[in-house]
Length: 111
Length: 119
Image: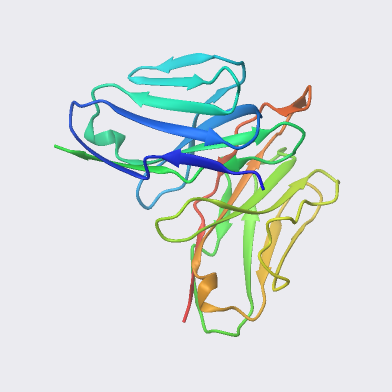
């Protein structure tokens, strides 16, 4: 079946270090979304990427959608303790009508 | 309302009992999703409603799980004869789900979830 995997599963970084999570789909995606879930909270939408090779930035966060529309990445520059949480990608496979969430990457930032 | 609401926020039940979880989506949102999230795990798709179309039930793990939605409003997820492995947070999300050229262009807004514990 359709799967969306994320690596790494866990990442601990020192405050100020950079962080990257990768999202890989077994099928081509129409678009991809990224969500952040704080500990004890619910997922909150961050951004959506639609075009092949698209890059979007939100302050210290950079999102990229692969040329083949099967992978994506989220890069955080100079992490802060407020970045702590689990980051999920959610892919929308072509020809389907539902999002498939990735397995998530749990980020811990050490002060 | 201002956002997606779910009730109850916490539910503790005994193995074998039935439970009903409720989701109130954002007014005007035609799409509604139910997900299950076990402790420390990702989101597991359960069921999807879109307007008056037949729901996509492909994620329901067993016939003990069912869900209903009246039009574009409230949805209820029912778990019959609960088992300990049903313990999880059940999340509901809604979106206006505009489909353009075969792709969704909308954000999913999540409710706070219902934490279900089966003893």
